Length: 271
Image: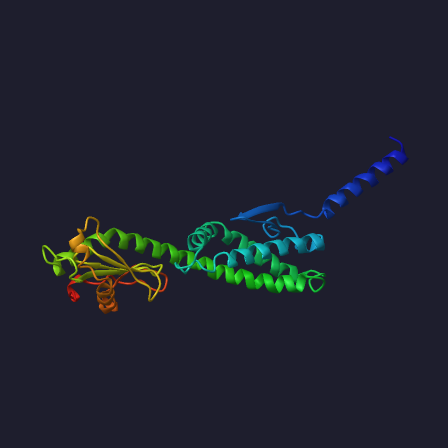
């Protein structure tokens, strides 16, 4: 190898070495989906990459995308504590889905938002607002995720309440009803209120008064009533008896407003 060739080889090798030393580590893209929402994010810290080396426009889009997903998550679960809401079941399902996966995304997003403050472009373009809004969304999302634990506990309590309800109902019936109750007697022996607001008052003669909305009642008669017995049934009397049942004696299904203990059948009598 002549002198010129050797010089070129040394210079070329040195250039490659310097280039390798100065290469920027790239954080791999990760896709995250929650319900119908999608977002792309990168764990710069986990990949030992400098977030400030990212292309600002792409980084802005990335942070904005995660912010958007979090905002959608919050708006899609804001009624997860209200059993009366039309989309309660769907929102609880989404909250459960998030409880198993969103925590990691929140950790990475929060770290990225903090790290970007050290970048030269941190105070330019959309970054100030993205950082501010992102931090707010992260905290709100963590609070919302904490509610998932409460929802799970309430669902377990509701399942137990449903399982034990027939025994409570039977005990109340044996306590307050005659062996052969007369149709039209309007004796209430048990009342229950579901988490969604529905309330039922059970009568010894087999009738049930139902209320879905406060102030609106309907009477359900047992099957097989004879024409003679039907003439004995006066709906207003049943409604009045239901309204007269002590509110504190209603067997309430547990909900997120606080666990409600079942009413004791021995603490009140019929009307």
